[in-house]
Length: 95
Image 1: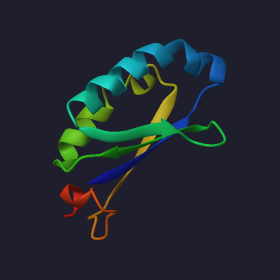
Image 2: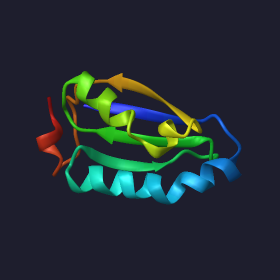
Image 3: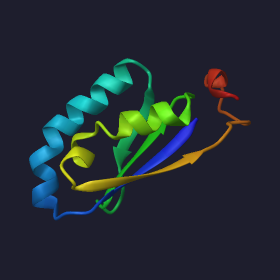
């Protein structure tokens, strides 16, 4: 599993131009369970995603298709981890 942090590299008005396409991109990935959670950082400097288990090369390929990345308004940072302790009902996430 991966935690992906998104950091905006452009002003919010420039980021906002790509927000609808970015939202569509996220909704598609979540519908296919490639991403499990996505949300905004507080304060609004970017976002955070939980990505499913997959080869890191596949995740890198997916992240390159993010409209934010394609349009140069954000960067991604990836941390891979193995979930060992999970809340009741989330046992399928354990590595």
